[in-house]
Image (cartoon, rainbow, N blue to C red):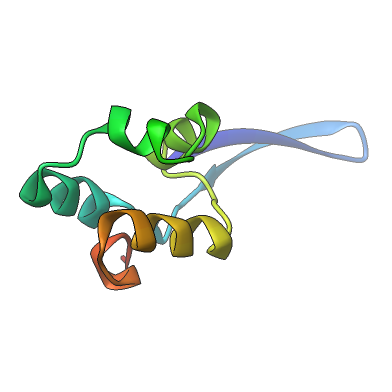
Length: 82
């Protein structure tokens, strides 16, 4: 969960951003298959993308497809909807 501040007509209001996508299955799948973050880096996933995944931030469908090809899994093994 993230908290961010937005401004309406000069007044600030804090709002909570609730993420509905979790990458928990990715870390479990990697552990089951013995795949490390280092392996992902060497296979073409950049450090910023890994950081975004760790923080639960958005990644592109192209990234999901790339991860599936590298790991040998389906999208369901990478993310889930909460």
